[in-house]
Image (tube, rainbow, N blue to C red):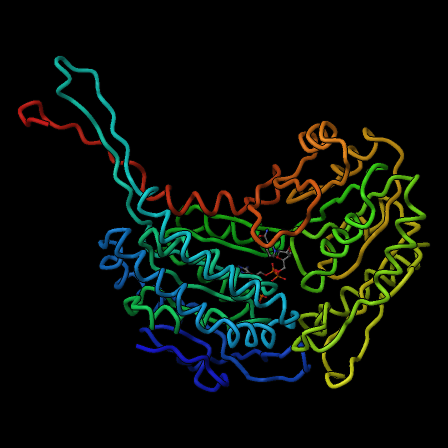
Length: 493
Ligand code: NDP
């Protein structure tokens, strides 16, 4: 079967029984194109009955897929990777329309998605193998072994900032492990997982193994409550993550993977190479409109460098182009929607009222040709205190905060003064200090001389994130509890 990138959303935003379709729902939500600000579709929300029906279809389809060997499943995943690469440009354009990110960044997401499918196709045969143990016995005649089995149907709930790639992060390991998937995207960016459904179908995935349901909080809740869902993987805010965990324990007990928010620090020491540190600060804050969980919005700059760093940063940012994300030269595209834009503006306004100084940006802008879209001019803010809301809470927008510091012990304490702990970055030429500070930063990922790399592996801090590293290993290794078999001695093994 061939794959063609859809031109519009009229054929529906659901994917089940191996095809794109729609449902009759009593409630609908509008689908916006962030770039133009236009409503491009009305999508019905799935209620609990719809969700249950689609989970049943997935449960019927899963055993056949789960019985294939990892190598056979890997062939399908490798074909998806090939198809993604063949259609990279069209898929990237679609991703820009879905999310508002610059086309140059969308291409990276799509390429990384192909890599993900290929990675799991390759790694699954090696990882999905059991263990063997000798048991106490005379003449070594008793032993045990484990088998790796799929969980069954897994539920995935996604955020809107990486609609295509985030879906792939979840489904590639799940499918490689022989599971069926029911995916609920964010209603802010619902289309990309549907395109993935069509790609998977064209690559030969059996009908029913991958499914997409649409809706808001109630739909996600129905997925968590469904007893046939064996595991839930969630990406979103801390508050919703807590609800997901509670709901997954209400009717049955199921494992949950939570990838939640962040408020990461980036530390620039006095010996840092300043132009590199400035590039990193821009990447760490304005990539994907600042809508990145690992964003290093708290930029700690050594007192001796603050003036030089600030001056050069503002100079570089004079060239920063905010505009139509389909233009090659655009560096910052559209914020996902109007409420989120207002939320980001609200953080800036309240910080100003508390005495913070906005050195550039921080306002809504209306770029030529896309005036009605949701555009925010990236902000650089100083004159801050660590206990201000803007320094403590996740903004999820293009806001860079300059926080001066004097010494190493002080900056480590301030960087760690957060309940998040997803990522951190640091700039120094002193390798010893880089390792010493990295070891003390309470963050799952610490980048030295880098931040927000597209291929990074997420770790986690104590409470608020169970990151991608867990995600990647869980689905490949944590199938059903290991089954120990004691073979009678009369069987010659
Ligand atoms: P939300 O927590 O608002 O929503 C996430 C998803 O959960 C949406 O699909 C949402 O639907 C759904 N949902 C809402 N209520 C429930 C419920 N009771 N049960 C189940 N699902 C529910 O997050 P956002 O979509 O706004 O995403 C932004 C957040 O995601 C940020 O905090 C960001 O840091 C984090 N993130 C983390 C990443 C990581 O890897 N750690 C990567 C990317 C983002 P609806 O929108 O209708 O409420």
